[in-house]
Length: 308
Image (cartoon, rainbow, N blue to C red; front, side, top):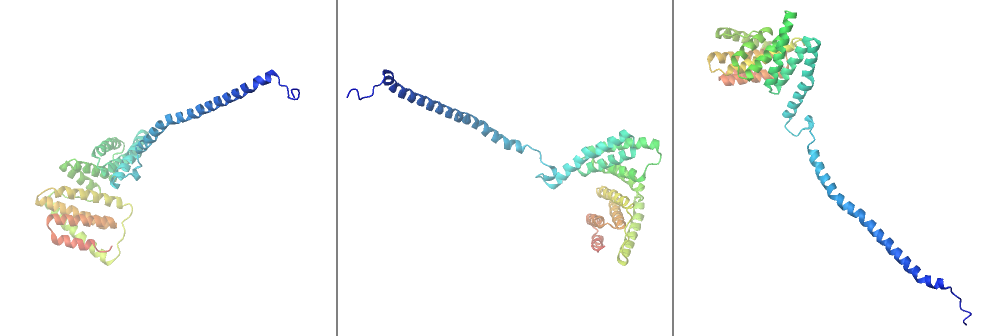
C-alpha cells in the first residue's frame, strides 16, 4: 500500500501553498492599482469642473460685449440711421475729400465736403458740419484764385448749408443774410424790406393762382432733371427763412414768413414732385395757422388735397 501511493518530491510539497498565496497577493496588488488608476481620472475631472463652469459663465458675458450691427440694433430706428450716417461721413465722405484735395481736384473735394456737411446737419452735428464748411471755404478761396467764376449751384449750396448752421447755433441775422444770398444765386430773390415783401407777395399769389388753373385744365409738365436740384435747394432755403421770420413778433416778420411759405409752395408746384408739394402745403397751412389766417389755411388745404 505504501508503494502504490505516488511519491512527491519535497520541493513540490513545499511550493503548493506559497504559489497560491503569491497569486492571491498579485491579484490584490493588481486590483489595488486598478482602483488607484480609476480614482486618478475622477479627481482630475473634479478639478477641471470648476474651471469649465467658470469658462461657461464667462462666455455669455463675452458674447454680450460683442458690438451690434447698426442696422440690427435694438434702439429706435432713428438712432440706427444716425449711426449709419455718421459712419458714412467718417469712412467714406471725409477720406474722399482728403484724397481729392491731395490730388489737386478741388471741385470733387468741394463736392464731398458739402456732402459731409449736409450729412452732419442731418444728424444734428453742427460742429462737424461747421468743420467741413470751413474746409470747403478754404477750397473756395483757393479755387477763386484759379477760376474767377465759381459754379453757382455749388456756391448756393455752400451758402444754404452755412445759413442752416447759423440758424442752428442762434446766429439769426447772419442766417437770414446768407440764405438770401443763396436764393439770389439760385434764381429766386427774396426781398429785404416790408414794401418789397408786399409786392412780392402779390406776385407770388398771382403765380399760385395760375398754377392752380393750369393744374386743373391740363396735365402738368414735369420739370427737367437739371432743374429739380435748383428747385429743391430753393425750397430748403425758403423753409429755413420761414422758420427764421416766424420767430419775429412783428407785422413785417409775419408778412415775410408768409411770403417764404408761399414761395416754397410755388417752387414745389413748379417741380411737380408729389412729396415736395405735400410738404410745402403742410408748411403753408402751419404758417397760416400761426398767423391766424383761417381763410387762407382752408383754401390752401383744399388746394393741397387736389389730385396732381
